[in-house]
Image (cartoon, rainbow, N blue to C red; front, side, top):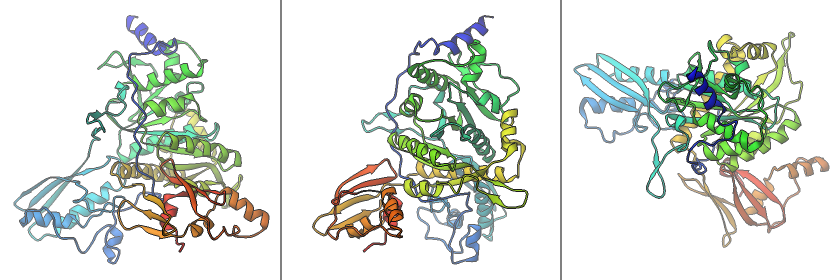
Length: 526
């Protein structure tokens, strides 16, 4: 009885608005800019001019740097033939090769990848084994796979900048992913749950928390063998998460059962504090990924979590309707304000497969491509209207665990691969923001990437390339395919970053444009 009462007190502490003694970290540091559109997992990329390139192998390799020659040098030289398809570098340069040992003709080493959920890890292993086996003196090759843990980066003041410093339950959580939507009823929770289980299938240790205090969905969508909340065995100041098929779970809905409170009725600040404590004081243990199923819309809870947690990225869920588009834009801009990169876009209920064999779009083509182009979102998938998806959600069984090999399961696998690949790119600093500047003397706009040479073009060519909503409305009203050209002497009067994905340019003719960095780097104007 004492232990049951202790659990109830812990779960109810936030309901009574009694704050726990925690330190609130500052807003999360910005991460690099997003790249262009990517989709499903790709095999390792190698020299395109050879037939082996399609299998991720190269017939040639670079000169070996840092090898001691001899057999070790030969092995490393061979391994330079395997290229990471996302980082665009060979696995030796990426630092993936660890514990290389050579005993006679036996070669063994470890591939330490950026994530245990790497979609191409088996291809890496297979191709590495094949290449090293080509050496005439090699009798056997043993390759093991591990993943590197995230390390704290030093802060500007010289101290140790720890992630989520005021959240003891998150100390061993490597990456946090928010799944969000601009409005309710678009299937966000369904996407969050199935994404979590799809990433777990790739090999990652995953947890999911339902951050909707007022309408928790997780207790309905996932039914573990036991829903009894207990204290952590390692720390009785924290709650132990539930678990189902290897995925850890937590929701206010579970704690409400323990305290017999029923539905949550509380003001915004109290709800935000409740959710923060539920995330921070759940003993998650080691997780590669924690999925946060955010409440719908943009509220105090979103801002609180964005300020107090280091979110590594967000997946946005929407539907094809115009109203959903308007709301999802607000959500994307909220995350950009909080410097949280958008990892992918899910257009749910986008189509249905008719018994006649045709694919129908009941709500039209949607606005997914427009969002991708406008905000530089790196991955996008569409999900169908399908009755058995909701049936699985209502029965407590995630769709992807019960319908393996189906079309929808494949789409979630594609989304999971794209998300983990994008996070690996961001962690490796692959998306640096280019420098954009206007040079008055030459009257050119110059775009200089972090690596490589810059490009310059006239302000007028860039102004004429604007494809904002205002320009498109002008074209539609005039019945033309192009916006009327800008004045010949138009120049930028102000440039300001738009989150981490784009730049806003105010022009001397009174117009304002938003260009993604990818659009600027690809601009072909004179």
